[in-house]
Length: 119
Image (cartoon, rainbow, N blue to C red; front, side, top):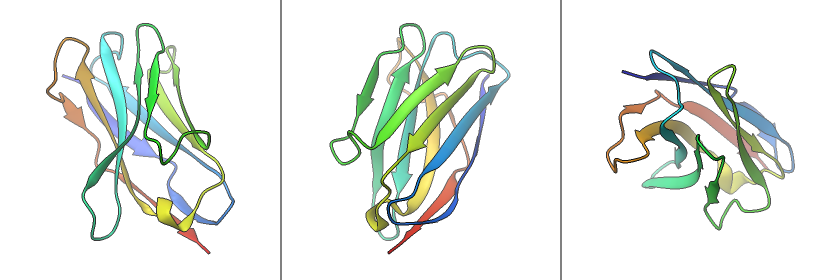
């Protein structure tokens, strides 16, 4: 069973950048779709982006298109979320989650990493 650990959160001023990492252990990501979600204070969980490990295809929420980029490193079994032009509205706990390509159920979630963007 895959386990996920996020890292890279922190505090940044508006307009700044951060890179989050989602490292997998226990299994490789080879047959997974890796997703990033976020939960802002007082709000529901929101889909941010995903990457299909086999072909690298990606999806983005409209709110982050053009600012965030998801990528993968096969050798490190790690997914990354590069966040540029951060806005205060991006403040949230960011979670990575993985599901098998053939499943709609998530096999694993990380514990989350906090991103705080100040104006």
